[in-house]
Length: 78
Image 1 (tube, rainbow, N blue to C red):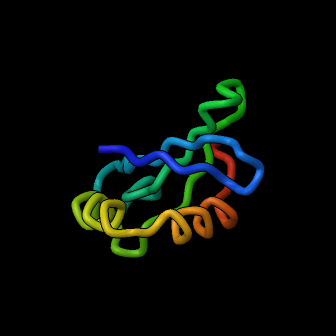
Image 2 (cartoon, helix red, strand yellow; image 1 turned 60 degrees about the vertical axis):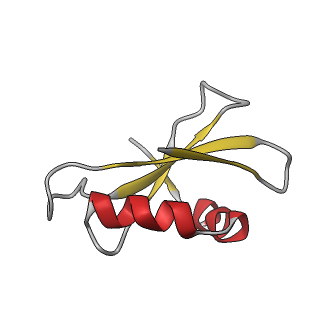
């Protein structure tokens, strides 16, 4: 499942959950992919639960404003 938000610079971002094994360094991350600049690296924040299922539930319930705040504190995926 994905969500789409527009940031304050009018860039469109796709937001989705991806994760590795529970309790691994890659577990339960919310990724932000800029649809207006596909050559830019994706950005992410870790979901505190470290559970993909919980992160997906939260993604559905978060407001666009909350997602924009998460985008602001996200880090580039390397």
